[in-house]
Amino acid sequence: QIARISCAFALALAGPLPVAAQQSQDLGNFIQQTITLHPAIRAAETAIAKARANRQAAGTYTYNPELGVDYENSAENKVDFEVSQTIDAWGRRDSKVAVAAAGVEIASAEYDLIETELIERLLLALGENRKQMERLRLAEKRLSLSDRFLQLVRRSAAAGDVGQNDVLSAEINKSNAELLIFTARADVAEAQRELIALVGEKRSFWPTLPDVQRLSNNEFRPELSRTPEQRLALASLKISKAGIVAADRERLPDPTIGFRVGEEGETRLYGLSLS
Image (cartoon, rainbow, N blue to C red; front, side, top):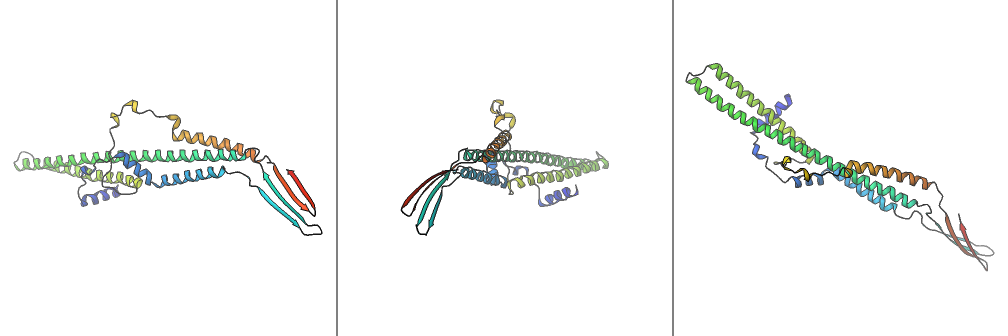
């Protein structure tokens, strides 16, 4: 409490904080700019790019062909050339692609979840700022009325219409109004510190929230099946199932076909292998 009063006193020494300074700005551009530059969004975008790269890598063929050359210098020179290729008979590549694709869906859902939470925090912070600014406006109005009332009581006391106790009561009322000003300014500073922490910079003006009560109920039709939480749950289930299929296929041996051709002296040799 002492720290808040000290902060408010410092703000009071710096001069009155005008309520009119909170001018309206475009809310959509403000939210979009904040989301684009926020570190959590940047990290989520990096995660999506990494997941897409993993999906692209998973689509490459699992096995590469192998080439072999065998030369023997003896009474009858021997030369062999062999080409072998392991075949993805059980669909290992497809299972890896399914796992990687589910990873992209998870990264995308996590991005939307972070974005939604950030927008929610921004709107709550803007609402808190608006509330504290309104409290400050009312406190300033009360101080103005208290000062006018004190001046009136002092004139009446000078004329002998009221006693000194009435003057003292009016002075106490003005002191209470001044204390409310200090507290209100401290609350405004605290609300704007939350906005600064979210946006990453100090601004002279913050956007105002629209009147939600004017929105028609028909304009708000949320798709509950497409919420980030729902998508994240479905993608997590999908990647679990795909991981089980991929693990099962990894245990199955893939066949390798080889073709061998060579010469031993004057004899040509041919061979075909399957393992």
